[in-house]
Image (cartoon, rainbow, N blue to C red; front, side):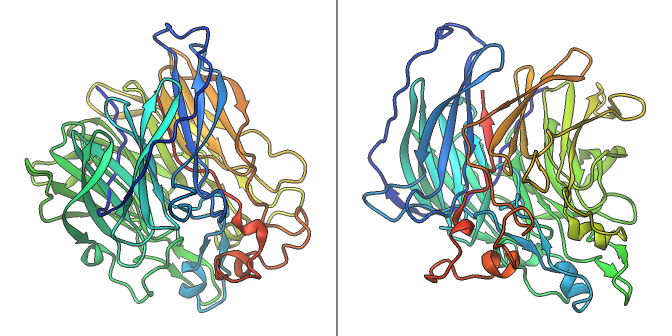
Length: 494
Protein backbone atom coordinates (compact mmCIF):
# COMPACT_ATOMS: atom_id res chain seq x y z
CA UNK A 1 0.00 0.00 0.00
CA UNK A 2 1.27 3.36 -0.86
CA UNK A 3 0.48 6.63 0.88
CA UNK A 4 -0.08 9.66 -1.20
CA UNK A 5 -0.93 13.14 0.08
CA UNK A 6 -1.80 15.65 -2.51
CA UNK A 7 -4.63 18.24 -2.92
CA UNK A 8 -6.64 20.30 -5.38
CA UNK A 9 -5.43 23.37 -7.36
CA UNK A 10 -6.65 26.50 -9.24
CA UNK A 11 -5.75 27.87 -12.64
CA UNK A 12 -4.35 30.74 -14.67
CA UNK A 13 -0.69 31.38 -15.21
CA UNK A 14 0.49 34.81 -14.09
CA UNK A 15 4.20 34.71 -14.70
CA UNK A 16 6.74 32.19 -15.91
CA UNK A 17 9.92 33.27 -14.26
CA UNK A 18 13.59 32.76 -14.91
CA UNK A 19 15.14 30.06 -12.82
CA UNK A 20 16.63 30.87 -9.47
CA UNK A 21 19.07 28.22 -8.38
CA UNK A 22 20.77 28.21 -5.02
CA UNK A 23 23.65 25.80 -4.87
CA UNK A 24 24.77 23.85 -1.85
CA UNK A 25 27.72 21.60 -1.23
CA UNK A 26 27.11 17.91 -1.82
CA UNK A 27 26.86 15.86 1.33
CA UNK A 28 29.31 13.06 2.03
CA UNK A 29 26.52 10.49 1.78
CA UNK A 30 25.39 11.58 -1.70
CA UNK A 31 25.32 7.96 -2.90
CA UNK A 32 23.22 6.80 0.05
CA UNK A 33 19.80 5.71 -1.20
CA UNK A 34 18.16 6.91 2.01
CA UNK A 35 19.42 10.46 1.59
CA UNK A 36 16.89 13.04 0.47
CA UNK A 37 15.49 16.49 1.12
CA UNK A 38 12.79 18.14 3.22
CA UNK A 39 10.88 21.32 2.40
CA UNK A 40 8.87 23.65 4.67
CA UNK A 41 6.95 26.78 3.65
CA UNK A 42 7.43 29.96 5.72
CA UNK A 43 3.91 31.23 4.87
CA UNK A 44 5.14 34.78 5.44
CA UNK A 45 3.37 38.04 4.61
CA UNK A 46 6.58 40.06 4.74
CA UNK A 47 6.37 42.67 1.95
CA UNK A 48 10.10 42.45 1.21
CA UNK A 49 10.97 38.75 1.33
CA UNK A 50 7.50 37.32 0.76
CA UNK A 51 6.62 33.65 1.14
CA UNK A 52 9.60 31.29 0.93
CA UNK A 53 10.48 27.59 0.88
CA UNK A 54 13.01 26.46 3.47
CA UNK A 55 15.04 23.52 2.15
CA UNK A 56 16.91 20.94 4.21
CA UNK A 57 19.23 18.13 3.18
CA UNK A 58 18.11 14.87 4.77
CA UNK A 59 20.83 12.39 5.76
CA UNK A 60 20.34 8.63 5.96
CA UNK A 61 20.04 8.83 9.75
CA UNK A 62 17.18 11.33 9.41
CA UNK A 63 19.20 14.39 10.42
CA UNK A 64 18.42 17.65 8.63
CA UNK A 65 20.92 20.28 7.53
CA UNK A 66 19.53 23.65 6.54
CA UNK A 67 20.20 24.68 2.93
CA UNK A 68 18.51 28.06 2.57
CA UNK A 69 15.38 29.93 1.55
CA UNK A 70 13.85 29.94 -1.93
CA UNK A 71 11.34 32.75 -2.68
CA UNK A 72 8.01 31.65 -4.14
CA UNK A 73 7.91 34.80 -6.28
CA UNK A 74 10.37 36.99 -8.14
CA UNK A 75 11.66 39.91 -6.10
CA UNK A 76 12.70 41.79 -9.25
CA UNK A 77 9.91 41.27 -11.79
CA UNK A 78 6.70 41.20 -9.74
CA UNK A 79 5.71 41.85 -6.15
CA UNK A 80 6.73 39.08 -3.75
CA UNK A 81 4.15 36.35 -3.31
CA UNK A 82 2.64 36.33 0.18
CA UNK A 83 1.49 33.62 2.56
CA UNK A 84 -1.30 33.96 5.08
CA UNK A 85 0.82 35.10 8.02
CA UNK A 86 0.34 34.11 11.64
CA UNK A 87 -2.93 35.77 12.54
CA UNK A 88 -6.17 33.94 11.75
CA UNK A 89 -8.92 33.77 14.33
CA UNK A 90 -12.07 31.72 14.74
CA UNK A 91 -15.18 33.91 14.68
CA UNK A 92 -17.74 31.09 14.58
CA UNK A 93 -18.08 30.87 18.36
CA UNK A 94 -18.64 34.60 18.78
CA UNK A 95 -21.23 34.59 16.00
CA UNK A 96 -23.02 31.47 17.27
CA UNK A 97 -23.43 32.92 20.78
CA UNK A 98 -24.19 36.53 19.87
CA UNK A 99 -20.97 37.66 21.48
CA UNK A 100 -21.12 35.61 24.69
CA UNK A 101 -18.04 33.65 23.66
CA UNK A 102 -14.91 35.32 22.29
CA UNK A 103 -13.05 35.07 19.06
CA UNK A 104 -10.33 32.46 19.41
CA UNK A 105 -6.67 33.04 18.64
CA UNK A 106 -5.31 30.30 16.40
CA UNK A 107 -2.08 32.05 15.66
CA UNK A 108 -0.06 29.01 14.66
CA UNK A 109 -2.45 27.77 11.98
CA UNK A 110 -2.46 30.30 9.19
CA UNK A 111 -4.18 28.15 6.56
CA UNK A 112 -6.46 25.65 8.30
CA UNK A 113 -5.51 23.05 5.71
CA UNK A 114 -3.32 20.14 4.74
CA UNK A 115 -1.05 19.67 1.72
CA UNK A 116 -0.29 23.34 1.12
CA UNK A 117 3.18 22.23 -0.05
CA UNK A 118 3.52 19.07 -2.14
CA UNK A 119 5.97 17.18 -4.33
CA UNK A 120 5.08 15.59 -7.65
CA UNK A 121 4.85 11.80 -7.75
CA UNK A 122 8.43 11.49 -9.00
CA UNK A 123 9.75 14.18 -6.58
CA UNK A 124 10.99 16.28 -9.49
CA UNK A 125 8.62 19.22 -8.95
CA UNK A 126 7.55 21.13 -5.84
CA UNK A 127 4.32 23.13 -5.61
CA UNK A 128 3.33 25.72 -2.97
CA UNK A 129 0.34 27.96 -2.25
CA UNK A 130 0.64 31.69 -1.66
CA UNK A 131 -2.62 32.26 0.22
CA UNK A 132 -2.16 36.00 0.70
CA UNK A 133 -1.53 36.58 -3.02
CA UNK A 134 -4.04 34.00 -4.30
CA UNK A 135 -1.36 32.30 -6.38
CA UNK A 136 0.56 29.03 -6.67
CA UNK A 137 4.30 28.64 -7.28
CA UNK A 138 6.11 25.71 -8.85
CA UNK A 139 9.76 24.69 -8.63
CA UNK A 140 12.06 22.13 -10.22
CA UNK A 141 13.89 20.06 -7.60
CA UNK A 142 17.65 19.68 -8.02
CA UNK A 143 20.27 17.85 -6.01
CA UNK A 144 21.68 21.25 -5.08
CA UNK A 145 18.52 23.31 -4.57
CA UNK A 146 15.34 24.54 -6.23
CA UNK A 147 14.70 26.53 -9.38
CA UNK A 148 11.44 28.42 -9.61
CA UNK A 149 9.51 27.67 -12.79
CA UNK A 150 6.19 29.51 -12.61
CA UNK A 151 3.74 31.53 -10.54
CA UNK A 152 0.08 30.97 -11.39
CA UNK A 153 -3.14 32.70 -10.40
CA UNK A 154 -5.29 30.35 -8.32
CA UNK A 155 -8.42 31.89 -9.89
CA UNK A 156 -9.97 32.07 -6.46
CA UNK A 157 -9.40 33.45 -2.98
CA UNK A 158 -6.98 32.03 -0.40
CA UNK A 159 -5.52 28.84 -1.94
CA UNK A 160 -4.72 26.33 0.82
CA UNK A 161 -4.33 22.80 -0.57
CA UNK A 162 -2.84 21.06 -3.60
CA UNK A 163 -3.00 17.63 -5.21
CA UNK A 164 -1.25 16.18 -8.26
CA UNK A 165 -1.60 13.00 -10.31
CA UNK A 166 0.20 12.40 -13.59
CA UNK A 167 0.27 15.76 -15.32
CA UNK A 168 -2.86 17.10 -13.61
CA UNK A 169 -2.86 19.34 -10.54
CA UNK A 170 -5.78 20.85 -8.64
CA UNK A 171 -5.77 23.69 -6.13
CA UNK A 172 -8.35 24.20 -3.40
CA UNK A 173 -9.30 27.80 -2.65
CA UNK A 174 -10.99 28.09 0.73
CA UNK A 175 -11.91 31.78 0.74
CA UNK A 176 -15.31 33.24 -0.14
CA UNK A 177 -17.43 30.40 -1.57
CA UNK A 178 -14.45 28.12 -2.16
CA UNK A 179 -13.40 26.57 -5.47
CA UNK A 180 -11.35 23.90 -7.19
CA UNK A 181 -9.20 24.75 -10.19
CA UNK A 182 -7.16 22.48 -12.47
CA UNK A 183 -3.75 22.82 -14.09
CA UNK A 184 -1.65 20.81 -16.49
CA UNK A 185 1.91 20.26 -15.31
CA UNK A 186 4.44 20.56 -18.12
CA UNK A 187 8.03 20.12 -16.95
CA UNK A 188 6.96 21.62 -13.59
CA UNK A 189 5.25 24.62 -15.23
CA UNK A 190 1.57 25.21 -14.39
CA UNK A 191 -0.85 25.65 -17.30
CA UNK A 192 -4.53 26.26 -16.47
CA UNK A 193 -7.29 24.14 -17.95
CA UNK A 194 -11.04 23.79 -17.52
CA UNK A 195 -13.52 25.91 -15.64
CA UNK A 196 -13.45 27.02 -12.03
CA UNK A 197 -15.48 24.55 -9.97
CA UNK A 198 -17.39 26.51 -7.33
CA UNK A 199 -17.91 24.87 -3.95
CA UNK A 200 -20.71 27.21 -2.91
CA UNK A 201 -23.40 24.53 -3.18
CA UNK A 202 -21.27 22.12 -1.13
CA UNK A 203 -20.91 24.34 1.91
CA UNK A 204 -23.17 23.66 4.85
CA UNK A 205 -26.51 25.46 4.94
CA UNK A 206 -26.26 27.89 7.80
CA UNK A 207 -27.33 31.25 9.09
CA UNK A 208 -23.67 32.20 9.50
CA UNK A 209 -22.07 34.42 6.86
CA UNK A 210 -19.57 32.94 4.46
CA UNK A 211 -16.35 32.74 6.48
CA UNK A 212 -13.53 35.06 5.56
CA UNK A 213 -10.15 33.63 4.57
CA UNK A 214 -8.40 32.45 7.67
CA UNK A 215 -11.57 31.23 9.44
CA UNK A 216 -9.75 27.98 10.01
CA UNK A 217 -12.38 26.00 11.94
CA UNK A 218 -15.08 25.98 9.26
CA UNK A 219 -13.54 26.07 5.78
CA UNK A 220 -12.62 23.34 3.27
CA UNK A 221 -9.35 21.77 4.43
CA UNK A 222 -7.91 19.34 1.89
CA UNK A 223 -8.37 18.02 -1.63
CA UNK A 224 -6.54 14.91 -2.81
CA UNK A 225 -6.52 12.43 -5.65
CA UNK A 226 -6.86 8.78 -4.72
CA UNK A 227 -3.69 6.75 -5.37
CA UNK A 228 -5.06 5.55 -8.73
CA UNK A 229 -6.11 9.04 -9.78
CA UNK A 230 -9.70 7.94 -10.43
CA UNK A 231 -11.29 10.08 -7.72
CA UNK A 232 -10.71 13.37 -5.99
CA UNK A 233 -11.73 13.78 -2.35
CA UNK A 234 -12.49 17.01 -0.50
CA UNK A 235 -12.94 17.62 3.23
CA UNK A 236 -15.07 20.47 4.61
CA UNK A 237 -14.91 21.18 8.35
CA UNK A 238 -18.34 22.75 8.23
CA UNK A 239 -20.61 25.38 9.72
CA UNK A 240 -23.83 23.51 10.50
CA UNK A 241 -24.18 21.85 13.88
CA UNK A 242 -22.49 24.54 15.99
CA UNK A 243 -24.82 24.93 18.96
CA UNK A 244 -24.47 26.67 22.32
CA UNK A 245 -26.71 27.51 25.25
CA UNK A 246 -27.68 31.11 25.91
CA UNK A 247 -24.88 31.20 28.48
CA UNK A 248 -22.34 30.16 25.87
CA UNK A 249 -21.93 26.53 26.97
CA UNK A 250 -21.03 24.12 24.17
CA UNK A 251 -23.76 21.79 22.87
CA UNK A 252 -22.07 20.66 19.67
CA UNK A 253 -19.41 21.68 17.16
CA UNK A 254 -19.90 21.66 13.37
CA UNK A 255 -20.58 18.36 11.61
CA UNK A 256 -18.84 18.87 8.28
CA UNK A 257 -18.80 16.62 5.23
CA UNK A 258 -16.62 14.79 2.73
CA UNK A 259 -17.09 15.17 -1.01
CA UNK A 260 -16.02 12.74 -3.72
CA UNK A 261 -15.62 13.54 -7.43
CA UNK A 262 -14.91 11.03 -10.18
CA UNK A 263 -12.00 12.08 -12.42
CA UNK A 264 -12.23 11.69 -16.18
CA UNK A 265 -9.43 10.75 -18.55
CA UNK A 266 -8.82 14.44 -19.30
CA UNK A 267 -8.61 15.39 -15.62
CA UNK A 268 -12.05 16.98 -15.48
CA UNK A 269 -14.08 16.16 -12.36
CA UNK A 270 -17.66 14.91 -12.18
CA UNK A 271 -20.61 16.13 -10.17
CA UNK A 272 -19.91 15.84 -6.44
CA UNK A 273 -21.22 13.14 -4.10
CA UNK A 274 -21.57 14.27 -0.47
CA UNK A 275 -21.23 12.16 2.67
CA UNK A 276 -22.43 13.95 5.80
CA UNK A 277 -20.39 13.66 9.00
CA UNK A 278 -21.77 14.06 12.52
CA UNK A 279 -20.50 15.56 15.77
CA UNK A 280 -23.14 13.49 17.61
CA UNK A 281 -21.64 10.32 16.09
CA UNK A 282 -18.09 11.48 16.94
CA UNK A 283 -17.07 12.19 13.34
CA UNK A 284 -17.51 15.98 13.35
CA UNK A 285 -15.30 18.26 11.31
CA UNK A 286 -13.34 16.13 8.81
CA UNK A 287 -9.96 17.78 8.30
CA UNK A 288 -6.92 15.93 6.93
CA UNK A 289 -7.04 12.49 5.34
CA UNK A 290 -4.63 9.86 4.00
CA UNK A 291 -5.15 6.92 1.68
CA UNK A 292 -4.41 3.32 2.55
CA UNK A 293 -5.24 2.30 -1.03
CA UNK A 294 -7.51 3.52 -3.83
CA UNK A 295 -10.66 2.52 -1.93
CA UNK A 296 -9.67 3.09 1.71
CA UNK A 297 -9.10 6.46 3.36
CA UNK A 298 -8.17 7.49 6.91
CA UNK A 299 -9.91 10.68 8.06
CA UNK A 300 -9.26 12.93 11.07
CA UNK A 301 -12.37 14.38 12.72
CA UNK A 302 -10.95 17.58 14.20
CA UNK A 303 -14.16 18.73 15.92
CA UNK A 304 -14.66 15.35 17.62
CA UNK A 305 -10.96 14.63 18.35
CA UNK A 306 -11.21 11.22 16.71
CA UNK A 307 -9.88 9.28 13.70
CA UNK A 308 -11.50 6.62 11.53
CA UNK A 309 -10.98 4.66 8.32
CA UNK A 310 -13.53 4.58 5.52
CA UNK A 311 -14.35 2.63 2.38
CA UNK A 312 -14.94 4.68 -0.76
CA UNK A 313 -17.99 2.95 -2.22
CA UNK A 314 -18.64 2.50 -5.97
CA UNK A 315 -21.27 5.26 -5.78
CA UNK A 316 -18.62 7.63 -4.30
CA UNK A 317 -20.14 7.69 -0.82
CA UNK A 318 -18.01 6.88 2.22
CA UNK A 319 -18.74 4.18 4.80
CA UNK A 320 -17.00 3.99 8.18
CA UNK A 321 -15.18 0.66 8.61
CA UNK A 322 -13.06 1.34 11.69
CA UNK A 323 -13.43 3.75 14.61
CA UNK A 324 -13.96 6.49 15.42
CA UNK A 325 -11.03 6.19 17.83
CA UNK A 326 -10.18 8.90 20.33
CA UNK A 327 -6.94 10.80 19.96
CA UNK A 328 -5.13 11.91 23.09
CA UNK A 329 -5.08 15.56 22.05
CA UNK A 330 -7.76 18.11 21.19
CA UNK A 331 -8.35 18.89 17.49
CA UNK A 332 -6.37 16.27 15.52
CA UNK A 333 -5.77 18.07 12.24
CA UNK A 334 -2.84 16.49 10.37
CA UNK A 335 -2.09 12.91 9.42
CA UNK A 336 0.56 10.87 7.60
CA UNK A 337 1.23 7.15 7.16
CA UNK A 338 3.86 4.73 5.91
CA UNK A 339 1.49 1.92 4.88
CA UNK A 340 1.88 0.07 8.20
CA UNK A 341 1.23 2.84 10.71
CA UNK A 342 -0.64 6.13 10.61
CA UNK A 343 0.26 9.09 12.82
CA UNK A 344 -2.02 11.94 13.84
CA UNK A 345 -1.04 15.40 15.06
CA UNK A 346 -3.39 17.33 17.36
CA UNK A 347 -3.36 21.12 17.34
CA UNK A 348 -4.14 21.32 21.05
CA UNK A 349 -6.46 23.76 22.79
CA UNK A 350 -5.88 27.52 22.67
CA UNK A 351 -6.98 29.20 25.86
CA UNK A 352 -10.17 30.54 24.27
CA UNK A 353 -11.18 27.03 23.23
CA UNK A 354 -10.88 25.87 26.84
CA UNK A 355 -13.53 28.41 27.76
CA UNK A 356 -15.76 27.13 24.97
CA UNK A 357 -15.36 23.57 26.24
CA UNK A 358 -16.37 24.65 29.73
CA UNK A 359 -12.94 24.82 31.36
CA UNK A 360 -11.32 27.92 32.87
CA UNK A 361 -8.51 29.49 30.82
CA UNK A 362 -5.01 28.46 31.79
CA UNK A 363 -3.01 31.01 33.78
CA UNK A 364 0.54 31.93 32.82
CA UNK A 365 3.13 30.64 32.18
CA UNK A 366 1.23 28.37 29.77
CA UNK A 367 -1.88 29.82 28.18
CA UNK A 368 -2.44 27.02 25.63
CA UNK A 369 -2.71 23.24 25.97
CA UNK A 370 -0.17 21.64 23.65
CA UNK A 371 -1.21 18.97 21.20
CA UNK A 372 0.22 15.47 20.90
CA UNK A 373 1.10 12.85 18.29
CA UNK A 374 -0.70 9.48 18.26
CA UNK A 375 -0.06 6.27 16.32
CA UNK A 376 -2.40 3.61 14.91
CA UNK A 377 -1.62 0.33 13.20
CA UNK A 378 -3.12 -0.11 9.72
CA UNK A 379 -4.42 -3.67 9.43
CA UNK A 380 -4.62 -5.62 6.17
CA UNK A 381 -8.37 -4.98 5.89
CA UNK A 382 -7.95 -1.21 6.30
CA UNK A 383 -9.11 -1.13 9.91
CA UNK A 384 -7.10 0.69 12.55
CA UNK A 385 -5.74 -0.42 15.92
CA UNK A 386 -4.38 2.12 18.41
CA UNK A 387 -0.68 1.70 19.11
CA UNK A 388 -0.42 1.14 22.84
CA UNK A 389 -3.07 0.14 25.36
CA UNK A 390 -4.26 2.60 26.45
CA UNK A 391 -3.44 4.83 23.50
CA UNK A 392 0.16 6.04 23.72
CA UNK A 393 0.73 9.70 22.93
CA UNK A 394 3.87 11.67 22.15
CA UNK A 395 3.93 15.28 23.36
CA UNK A 396 5.43 18.14 21.44
CA UNK A 397 8.58 19.66 22.89
CA UNK A 398 8.06 22.12 25.72
CA UNK A 399 7.78 25.66 24.33
CA UNK A 400 10.31 26.98 26.84
CA UNK A 401 10.36 30.37 28.56
CA UNK A 402 8.59 33.26 26.90
CA UNK A 403 6.19 31.05 24.95
CA UNK A 404 2.57 30.30 25.83
CA UNK A 405 2.38 26.99 23.96
CA UNK A 406 3.67 24.78 21.15
CA UNK A 407 1.65 23.40 18.27
CA UNK A 408 2.54 21.05 15.43
CA UNK A 409 1.31 22.14 12.01
CA UNK A 410 1.57 19.43 9.35
CA UNK A 411 3.35 16.10 9.69
CA UNK A 412 5.04 13.94 7.09
CA UNK A 413 6.39 10.39 7.19
CA UNK A 414 9.56 10.16 5.13
CA UNK A 415 11.14 6.70 5.17
CA UNK A 416 11.43 5.57 8.79
CA UNK A 417 11.08 9.07 10.20
CA UNK A 418 8.18 11.31 11.17
CA UNK A 419 8.76 15.05 10.73
CA UNK A 420 6.50 17.83 12.02
CA UNK A 421 6.54 21.63 11.79
CA UNK A 422 6.49 23.74 14.98
CA UNK A 423 5.69 27.30 13.85
CA UNK A 424 5.64 28.84 17.32
CA UNK A 425 9.23 27.66 17.91
CA UNK A 426 10.53 27.95 14.34
CA UNK A 427 11.69 24.33 14.35
CA UNK A 428 11.14 21.00 12.61
CA UNK A 429 10.81 18.02 14.93
CA UNK A 430 11.75 14.45 14.03
CA UNK A 431 10.77 11.15 15.57
CA UNK A 432 12.17 7.77 14.52
CA UNK A 433 9.52 5.11 13.84
CA UNK A 434 10.29 1.68 15.31
CA UNK A 435 9.22 -1.67 13.87
CA UNK A 436 6.25 -1.81 16.25
CA UNK A 437 5.08 1.74 15.43
CA UNK A 438 6.48 3.49 18.49
CA UNK A 439 8.15 6.89 18.16
CA UNK A 440 11.61 7.31 19.71
CA UNK A 441 14.59 9.70 19.74
CA UNK A 442 12.97 13.11 19.35
CA UNK A 443 15.29 15.69 17.75
CA UNK A 444 14.60 19.33 16.83
CA UNK A 445 16.13 21.18 13.87
CA UNK A 446 16.20 24.97 13.45
CA UNK A 447 16.23 27.15 10.36
CA UNK A 448 12.75 28.69 10.60
CA UNK A 449 11.80 31.97 12.23
CA UNK A 450 9.75 31.66 15.45
CA UNK A 451 6.13 32.65 14.98
CA UNK A 452 4.25 35.44 16.69
CA UNK A 453 3.44 35.00 20.39
CA UNK A 454 -0.12 36.35 20.77
CA UNK A 455 -0.39 36.88 24.54
CA UNK A 456 0.73 40.14 26.09
CA UNK A 457 2.41 38.66 29.15
CA UNK A 458 4.88 36.94 26.80
CA UNK A 459 5.06 39.70 24.20
CA UNK A 460 4.57 43.17 25.72
CA UNK A 461 2.57 45.48 23.50
CA UNK A 462 0.29 42.81 22.03
CA UNK A 463 -2.77 44.24 23.75
CA UNK A 464 -5.33 43.20 21.15
CA UNK A 465 -4.00 40.48 18.91
CA UNK A 466 -7.25 39.93 17.05
CA UNK A 467 -7.72 43.47 15.82
CA UNK A 468 -4.00 44.16 15.44
CA UNK A 469 -3.45 41.34 12.97
CA UNK A 470 -6.50 39.49 11.70
CA UNK A 471 -8.77 42.49 11.22
CA UNK A 472 -6.12 44.99 10.15
CA UNK A 473 -5.56 46.10 6.59
CA UNK A 474 -2.05 44.83 5.65
CA UNK A 475 -1.60 47.84 3.37
CA UNK A 476 -2.30 50.29 6.19
CA UNK A 477 0.98 52.02 7.26
CA UNK A 478 0.07 51.35 10.90
CA UNK A 479 -0.14 47.59 10.34
CA UNK A 480 1.74 45.92 13.19
CA UNK A 481 5.21 44.78 12.10
CA UNK A 482 5.00 41.58 14.15
CA UNK A 483 1.94 40.56 12.14
CA UNK A 484 4.13 40.30 9.03
CA UNK A 485 6.02 37.38 10.52
CA UNK A 486 5.63 34.00 8.94
CA UNK A 487 3.88 31.07 10.56
CA UNK A 488 5.52 28.04 8.96
CA UNK A 489 3.11 25.54 7.48
CA UNK A 490 3.32 22.87 4.82
CA UNK A 491 5.91 20.10 4.71
CA UNK A 492 7.05 17.74 1.95
CA UNK A 493 10.05 15.49 1.57
CA UNK A 494 11.68 12.36 0.22
